[in-house]
Image (cartoon, rainbow, N blue to C red; front, side):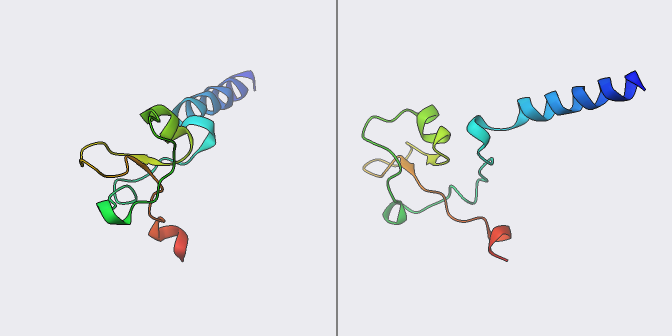
Length: 80
């Protein structure tokens, strides 16, 4: 019986460590593929990638003159 409890605790810890910050769901690449003109600002100027992700937003600094921290597109699975 103690072995089963130990296994359950181990699984719970592993799942806890694998979850994203502050309980936010992990965003998919498709959700964060948003055109430059379609991005809506999700953070103040100078926001760090970590701060952006902690807000549940996407961060992409690869496009000059675009919003770097922006809201993701909705996951299509959630729309059904």
